[in-house]
Image (tube, rainbow, N blue to C red; front, side):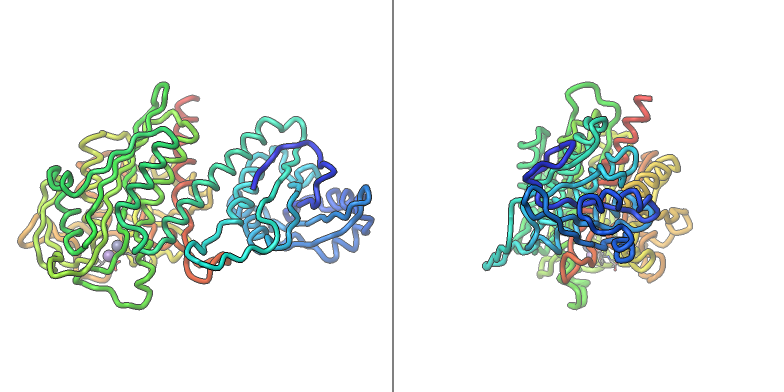
Length: 497
Ligand code: BES
Ligand code: MN
Ligand code: ZN
C-alpha cells in the first residue's frame, strides 16, 4: 500500500472515499456528490446517515471510465481513534473487491479545517486494514488486489501538515503491524530470544542501541527475581536494554519497563486450561515498549528514551520456583513467592530497579499485562493507571483521551501495603486475598522504584489484546505505543514553549 498527497483526483483514480461525520453540513458535501453522480441529494440523504462504519456506494462515469464514490460514515463527533478504526474496518472488510487506485477525499468540505489529524488516522487505519493475522496459514488465498495506491486529497494550503500527517499514519501502521505479529505469535514461535532479536533488528534499522543480557550475564548482574521466574523454563531468559538518544540535545530521560512473559502457565500455581492460550500475549507490555522505542527513533524525538524488558517464560518443571520459596532480587530485597502465577511483578521488580539504578530517568513508566483483577475492575475498555505523581497522571490522562487508549487511575494508598508483609522475607508477592489485586500488585512494584518521584504503572491486562471484527479470537491492539508517543510529544512541546 502506498500513499501520495495530491490536490485533486487524477484520471486513474477509480474510486473516491469520502469520510463524513454526523452533524457536519451534509447538504454541502452531498451537493458535490450529486454534481459528480447525478444522484439527487435527497435520495442519498434518505439512505445514508453517516453512522460509524456505514458505507454507501455510488457509481458514475467520467471520461468514459466507470468510477465509484464510497460515502464512509464516521459517526457522531469522531475522535482520531474512531476515524482510524472506521478506515481499518473499511479496508479489512472490502479489500477483496476494492479497486487498486483510490482517492481519499478531504476536499468535499467534509473534514475539519485542519484535516491533519484525520489524515493521519485515516492513513493509519487504511494501512492496518491490510494487516494479516494468518501468519502460519499454508494456503494464502489472495482475492483481488494486494497493492493499493491511495491519493490523499487535500487543499493546497494544507499540503505541508497533511504530508507530515500522512507519513506519520504510515509509519505508525508499520510499527503497529510488526508489534501485532509479535503479540499474536504463539509461544513456540516467540521465545525471549525472539523478543531480543526483534529489538536488535529494530535498533539496527532505526539507529538506536540495543544490548541483550543472556543467562550468564543475568546471573552475574544478580537479576535474581527474573532468574527465579525462569527456573521452570527450558528457554533461557533475556534482559533487553534499548536506548534511543537524539542526535542533538536531549530534553529528558524517559525510562520504560515492559513485562516480557512469552508464556504464562502460572508456574506450579498453574492456571486453569480455559483461555490459557491467551497467555502467549503476556508480553503485551514488552511489545508496547519495543514499539515505542522504535517510534521514538523513527520520529527522532529530542528525548533520551530507555526501554528495559525482562523476558522469560513462566513454566512448569521440577526445578520451578515453588510456592513458599524465598528468592532474591536485583535491588537486594528478599521475596516470599506465595503464588508463582504472580510472576510479572517479580520480573518487573528487577526491571524497574535496573532502570532506576543505571539511568536515573526523569520519568519512569512500566507497562504490564499484570492482573486479572484489573480486567475485573475496568473490563477491556481502559488500562489501570497507578502513579505517585499527579502531574504525570494528568499528562497521561490527556494522552489517553487524545489517542483513545484509555486509562483510569486507581489508588496507591499505603493501607494496601500491609497485605504484602511476609513473616520470613522482606515482602511476599501475593496477599492471598482475592480483593484489590491490581492495587496490591502495584504496591509490590512500588517497593522496587527506590522512591522514584515520577513513576507510573500501567496495568494493560484488559487492553493489550481485545475482541474485534478483525479476528475471531482476541488479538493484539498495540496498546501503549500511541499513548506513550503522544505523552512524549507533549513533554517536548511543553519544554519548547
Ligand atoms: N499474566 C497474568 C495476568 C493476566 C490475566 C493477564 C488474564 C491477562 C489476562 C498474571 O501473571 C497473573 O497470573 N496474575 C494473577 C496474580 C495473582 C496470582 C496474584 C491474577 O491476576 O490472577
Ligand atoms: Mn501469572
Ligand atoms: Zn503473567
